[in-house]
Image: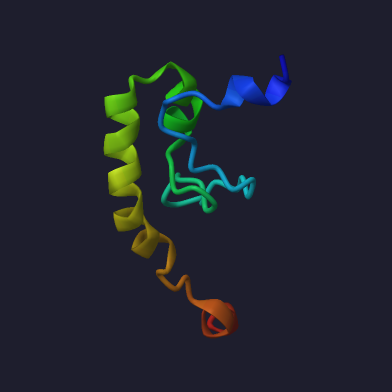
Length: 77
């Protein structure tokens, strides 16, 4: 039996893209947009809960696009 067969289960896949950086203000991963709690519990969640989170993830993306000041904010200091 190939080890690849283990990962071909009928469950909601993780949205992880292996860019694991938690945004300091929003407290969500900049790669997959999940909270630390969601990332931690993912493997233990029911498929329905995973599906709900997957549906909500695109709505979180704008939270990371807020400008934090950039160069002009640094010059004001």
